[in-house]
Length: 401
Image 1: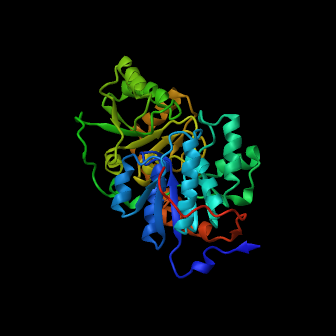
Image 2: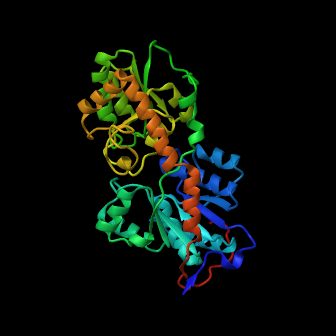
């Protein structure tokens, strides 16, 4: 027996609970908020749920007029997590949500069981990386896959992730939907149509050659060590080069120490977390992301939307966006010499740099525009799904512990 989405509730908009662990400046968090805003503007009733009501994106959610609900959980291993999960199930049922969409690993583990308990017609889990982080021990992977199998749909943001889940994890291919990350391409049009400006306070060293590197610094995975080594090589030929490192994390101090040890303080600048990346990128000529592993990185999409020539590594979903020599340059990961040579080539060859930037923007317009994402989400939300297994109805009370 199948049940079509919202068939008995056609008189009202579809109600969606977008759930995320927190509202910090991470890739999954940005995608969650942007999708929530877009859905809300297009006829859906959207509430943003979280486990920690913290982070710079809170303001963006509030500006969109979206309700935020918190179910505070510090650790999923403590009894409080079970109480909060039951509270979430009661909240979902009391508010008649048609869709629960979990947007990161911890949201999957917390919100998917609650949605299943509440009998939600459409439950979307997410996988936005290749399970390469420290979190993914064999036991945790087994638990996560079990939880993801409770959902009606599993959203991934690249074909490479889908292939891994099917081949290595034996997940059902039919339940996995590839939806590329979305980006508001119009916010980045300045890079294509306007001269570079400096909306942020950075001392100029004319003639600057500015390069953007956007990525968190929680681990070595974004390739900052190789980037710093490559910067030393690039500076020898181009002393006025400046690498703007946007992002923050536990390893930032280590990276700053390496920059000082290499004497690169004037060439590698740490800008920290920034909310004005669309304004920074138009000032730059090149975008670099030398990651060791990825899903589908927002940074690369942002470079491409801004019309920058991109140097990246062929890991995860990056080759699904960048074809070497056609709309960017791909270099082997963990190879600072190859990285430096690619950057120098783009600095020297202006026609190539401009052509790659133009082609990159065309690619992201065709693959990652948010309105394409909206269309794919609508299809996922409205697809027929199996009726949930009957479960006891939790109390309608949603009082916090």
